[in-house]
Length: 226
Ligand code: DX5
Ligand code: ZN
Image (cartoon, rainbow, N blue to C red; front, side):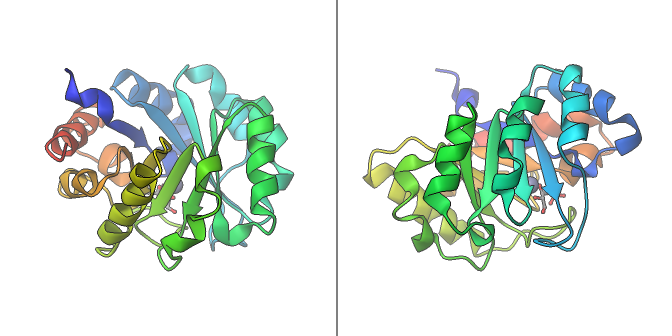
């Protein structure tokens, strides 16, 4: 059995060179990325602005990789159908940004994409309880959303363990993703705790060894946690 198949690495283009975004995405894809993680920020839900639907549509042609779109915006429901049409494969919204959660998750699924739900560091995992069976992916933030290059918040490990238990105890197969401050030094720990999809921005795109080596280093470390 190839254990690496249980781990998925999702480079975040937030740390990429935006002037060469298409090429940087292709580089990650060719370098072994499983997903391309796209951080959409609106300057309201988080204090930063990135990019939206037109940019995602423009880079869709650069790769066939899975587009994992992380919506750090208020009222994400306003963009779901456009994002799906632009080529998103997974759309993750924040529990803190949505009023009618059940409705929005249904809207994502109806758009033909997979539905993810993200929790910021201060949000307890109990908020997942009633919606968990509907989800394709749970994203546990290990930094406060808004910026790349921050340090991993250690109590995230306990949250990942709790969500892993909630999933396994209920026979649920949603993917468990962790995002923020992830690299070769902590990849093993988050996998041991139960994460299987690892987002990494600076550890991939700011690595002096290059994108492919960085992805391999994270994957090798992560596999030690299986
Ligand atoms: C932060 C974003 C992350 C970010 C991770 O709000 O959601 O995806 O790009 O960057 P690193 O890996 O540098 O913490
Ligand atoms: Zn993200």
